[in-house]
Length: 414
Image (cartoon, rainbow, N blue to C red; front, side, top):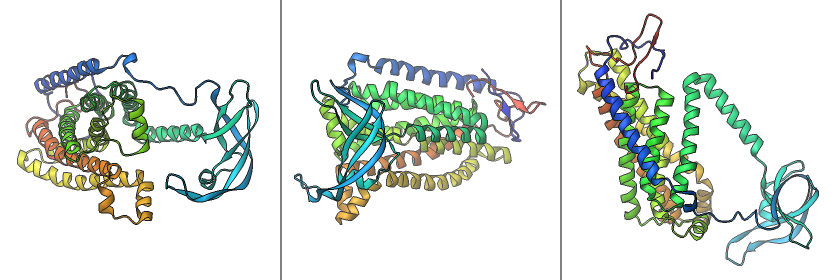
């Protein structure tokens, strides 16, 4: 199996490092084999995965698509404190008329949903309730978002391929591989009661082997990044397990968590919290390790005679900048996804220190800190692998040999 593309690095010349390529091929294939064997052992049978009845597929209950044709606000006395002590939205409710494939439908929106916004012409999904022998009624379920989401996904794919070309295409294929691993293996295994952390490690290892070589090509450079990534996964898993136990994170921090544990009583939510720390950090971890390996290769090309210690020190200067920006990325990603919770904390005038120790916020803080520690430790580890595997002054990168035609090829292991 060969990988071919143009390359102009001055380090890409000389005879192939066939022995190193062969050794790395064996090592990578061994890791992949262990991951596949572990995945097969952990793969749950269909009857082992708990399944609850879809609440919208019971007898006489279906979902239908509709288009809003009329909106009539009315006073529903909404406001003040509800029976459970939660503040209710003040304002009008709305009587909505819509058209479906079967004809007209009417339903009411509560004040919070109506205030969020709905207009004539909006495409919505409704719950159609038709008990035997009774009249049909409708309830609002959600807006139809299939078309805009599909359009955004297509635009994203086209732009990635247009800018990154083959690497962009392979990166998109890698996303598909990731989604398959998550939906067909990891999520069912979590539900079936397999060890969440072990499932996360095995699944993440398989994902990274596929994604790294798909997106970045088959080379010794990519293999160096892979080794650093795998060490980062292991470190993050160990830190996640220890931190979850130390901080007593149970995984029950929201209404959805309570519904899940009621639906699947045997699920290990605390273990899933630790597992998500591994999964959540994969993207940034991959970015850091690939960048560090590439930095070492480029510096070796510019300074072929540089000593290993000097090369490591130079690459770590780049790594420190990358660590800083990656940590910000993790924090900003959480702040953006948890904005509603943060706004509610501010509105309640509760101190951040107080809220940081709650299950819901504390879980995200620990997840962010563990992910950050894992990627910070992965930087020097990846740099060491890259310095060790990068071509020396008299031993250029043999898996990227520039030919007269400007292309190069190399065996799988590198």
